Amino acid sequence: MKKNVKRFEADIVVHPDEEKIVDTVNKSIEIFYLKEQEKLLTYREFLWIQFRITQKKWWFLQILLLAGIGMVLSSNQEEFFVQRGLGIASVLFVILIIPELWKNKSNQCMEIESASYFSLRQIYSARIFLFGLVDVVLLTGFCLFLHGRLHITLLSLLSQFLFPAVVTACICFGMLCNKKNVNETISIVFCILWSVVWWGIIANEKIYSLIRLPVWILLVGVALVVLGNFIYRSIHECTKCWEGYKCN
Image (cartoon, helix red, strand yellow):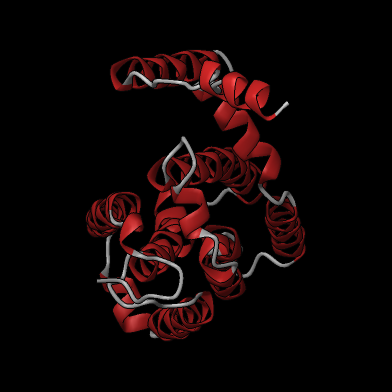
């Protein structure tokens, strides 16, 4: 019996061929990648998924804010009241996007997102694109309502709503792409401080009356350029921040 076992063991001895093993592994990897590519999302599907996972409550709150300000201003059309109402609304409108933009930092999931097929840069780009698209639609409707119902001029829209909103967005994205690991609370505090500064500017009639339409257009243009730079930096430098580490 022992002789049969030894003879059987001798017959089943395997002599591996390293080249064939490596070739088999490489072919297996290639087939695996080919099969996985059939399951990859298109950019349209990726954008749709980002839209679905975006918390809609922030857009809903933005709609409520604009609707509330519109109704309040319709009942009280005094210029002094309108100026302050639009200034506060513009700052709050932008503040409402901060929690969604900061959620991967606050949830400490940046490393997990960076390990996915779509990079963290693409995730930020999709998130900013979606918020920008929705907010442009909301603000366009709001400005058309103010122009038609309250007969607010272009100068008033630029100076009382659009300019403080763009500056608030600059603060928001400037904090987001900051080299230091700044959380959303600090960003909100700076936005509120800006609203206080803006309140003081529009309360000073001497300063406010000196600024004409060309100056407002120039100020809004400069603010938009700065905002574009901050958004670009937020997208392209977002991978420098990692869970448990400070930004370099």
